[in-house]
Length: 625
Image (tube, rainbow, N blue to C red; front, top):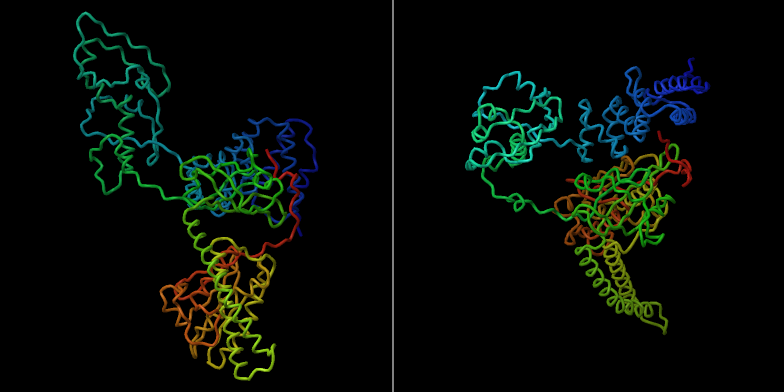
């Protein structure tokens, strides 16, 4: 057997001088730069601590030079991220040298600091997945394209002069904009406009132009000052060289034409500020998902809003905010956030008051905190207000209807139980039927009230822990006995391992029964319903085949969808209402219930395993270079 003790051997020696420190720094980079392998986590942590200690001895330029050397491997995403948070020169050298896979880049880039991501835009060898992540985060160069060569331009200029004026640029890359002396003239009017100006009086002399400042070594030497007669007439040499403000105007015009839609002619004349009138109205942004790093800065968001919110610091203390309403207080204590008000400033689409729901994230192995993930939603939305008012009116109506129904049920029970004396059996049977109908009506009122409160966010499901696989397995066993006389059955494939949900057992049982009983009630004679329940990442997914009666409906969640005359039913308002209520319960639990072609798909988030204790709030989250 072979044991790799190179890292322990390097850490066993102490660097006594600057030269020894540089040597040990190179050794640690060479060992840590390999791809992550199984090893002692404490030994790797000690290696990062030794790098921090060596950073106090080695200067920043020397460390940047060592990191940029080509004699060592750089394939460890952890080391790349660690260097990405160091000094910008060290981070730039590390990100230029990193050699990671497509999946590793896609996972690493959103966790890098904002300035560190900017270094990656200069690399041309990144995989396609990394480029898509950079585009989604809004990291890209903005350069004006070169103007197309004009066919009417004279070609008397010498090839040597053109080569000196135009630096070599690789094909397909935009040429950087270089300021030339002609751009720094006091008079912004180009020479060809001077030719149209009226001649100056004989007794006035043109003022001498100031000497231009040489900004670029590639810029040509300044031409000799023209005489008054020569300045009024453009020469072939002056028109042949696309330099100065004229070149800048041509590049801006080429950039504008490149952004014109294909349906609009590129040479179509436009009025001043005509593009402002043609600007498409922005769609109102009601909510978006986001994630933060361990410092509380947003490092990921939905693609349509990422360029506007990435980089916002949510962890700083806000004025006039109570501890219960401050993100910074919850951030320090690593507490989940529920309906926390916050105000964003910035672009017009995100400006205003928001409500934040978020939860802290911890690594599975070490329990180390590495940020929050959640969702922003508008604090005041007109649509939500209308829905809330409608739900309030419905609940008031249900309250008024419950009173007579409760009275009928009470009197029926009095007659059926012969409280006031003997009653004929015929009246007792009628009273029992009335009491049963009243109970079903009250159950329907409860379902209506529950749906209204769930869809408006006024009701939260009871938290707890339950096993969805065990619940579905038991309920299918009960339903098989009912479907047996009709020669119908569920053909279920359920995962063997448990699927813990953050719901109380009664809530999970109610949700599962509402879906399965609705499907069983709509199942026809001799019909087989396929069902699959299995984990999918951090979710548990139930896929059930729709019975024939429900598969033909355009919208299975509509209230007019009925399952037929089956004795098995999950509610008095039909299959469509029951599925709509189940969808509201699933969304309140953080999941969803949708129809995918001929299948009904239920997805619910799994309960996070508590395999290790989280790190203390005052403990450092990561090493810094």
